[in-house]
Image 1 (tube, one colour):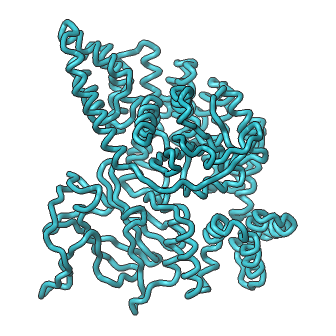
Image 2 (cartoon, one colour):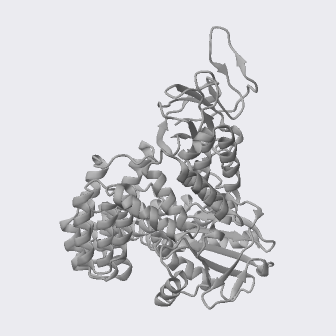
Length: 628
C-alpha cells in the first residue's frame, strides 16, 4: 500500500536489455501470453479511476477455471509512475479477474473486472476461459468483485465458447442453464429440454450430469423425468452430493427440535465431513432463538460451541439485545462466542474460503469477533457493569475500524458516562468525520462538551463543523455512487391480489427493496426501513415497494403475508415468486435497494445492510432528495 503519483508516459516502450515493457494506460500485464502455472506481472495506474490520489491501494486477484478457484492478496509496489505486482497462476487456471480498492472505494474496471485470459504453449486462448468468465458474470463475480451481472453478455460468451469448443459445454451446464433461463424467457424450457436430451444420449455421464438432469427436468416442469433421475441417483450414488443436499432439504422441513437433532446426528455419522453440518447446528440454535427459549439456546451453544458457526453466538445474543431479554444469559452466550471467535481469529480451524483473500478472511473473522464483543458489551452495559463494558466495546470499535454505527454509538455512550469527556469529544468528532455518527451522538457530544467546558456556550458552532463534515462526506459518497440507467419495467401482484407495475408509478420516486423472509440482513434492516416508510407516508411523490423474492417455501404469498402481519410492518409487498424481476434488475445478493427517479431511471443501488437503522434512514433520505 503506497502513495500514487501522476503518470507521464502514455505509450508502451520497450527498453533495450529488458524484456519488460514500459507501461502506460490504466492496466496492463506481461507477458502477453500467460499459460497455467506461469507468473504474470501486472501494471496499474489509478489516475483516471475513483482511486486517484488514494494514499493506499490494495489488489485482489481471483483465479478461476469453471468456478472460482482462489482469491489472493497481491502486493503492489511502486515502479516509476505506476504500480506493479506479480500474480502466480496454477495449473488449472483458465483466467484471472482483478480488482483494486482503497478503503470503501473500488476500481473493478467499470464493473467488468480487469481480466487476463490464459493461453496454451502456442499462445492460443484456453478452451473454457470464455465460459469461465461468463460463469463469473452470472454469479460469483457479482458477489466478490461487484461485476455487472449482465446475463445477456454471459449468454453471448457461452455461445461463443461452445461454438468453438463444443466439448466445454459439459463443464458449464449449471451456469449456462441459469443464464438461458433468465435471458430466453419465452423459449428457455425448449432450449434446456433439448440440451437435457443430448446429455441423456451421452455414454460418459457422471453423477453431476445425473444431478443436472434431475434438477433441471424439475425446473422446466417434467416431474416424471426428474423423479426418474432422482431415484437413479439415490440408488447409484447414495453418498453423493445430490443425496446429501436432498437430506439437508428434508432436515430443514422438520419442525420439532428433538427430531431435528436426531436427524442431524444420523446425518453427521453418515457424512462426517459434509459442509451442511455446521449450518444444521446453526439452524437448531435458531429454533431456540426464534422460540425465545434462551436458556435452551445457552445450553445448546455450550454443548456444541465448536460445532456451530462463529457467527451463531452473535445471532442469538443480538436477538436478545433487540428484545431486551435476559442479559445474564446473553452475557454467558457472548462469552462463549468471544472465546470461540478469538481462537478462530488467531488459529483458524477451517480452510480459507476460495472467495476470500487471506486479508479479507482475517478481516471477516475479526468482524465476527467484533460483533460478538459488541453484544457482550451491550449486555454488560445493561447489567450496570460499566468498567467491564468499556474495554470490550473499545476493542470492537478498533476491530471494525470505526465503521459500524451501532458499535460506535455504544462506545460514545460509555465514554460519556465514564466521564472521559475529552476522549469522547475526540472520538465522536472522528465518527462524524468518517460518516459513522448516529443521531444520538449529538446528545453524547453535548453532554461531554458541557461537562468539559462547564457550560453549553459555543456548542452550536462547535458541532456544526462536525455535522457539515459528515454531510459533505455523505454527499460526496452519494454523488460518486449516483448512476442513471433505465429501470426494467415489471408488473407483480401484491398481498391483496392487486397488480402493481412500475410504469404506473412514473412521476414518483420509487424505492424498490428486494428481500426474503429467510434473509437475516433483510430482516435486520426492516426496523430502519419501517422508519423510512413512516417518514414519507404522507408524501405522495415517494413510493416504497418491497419485492419478496428468492423464497424457499411452496406458498410464497402466504408466507410473506403471515410474516408482514406478525411483525406489523407497514410495507407494500409484491411477490416475485418466479424470481423474474430480481433477474431483470441483475441483483447478486439481498437485501438490495434501488432508488428510481420520476423518469423511471435507476439513480442509486444499495446492497446489504450496515447494521445502523438511523444511518439507513439518513442515506435513503439523502438519495431521495438528490433524485427529486
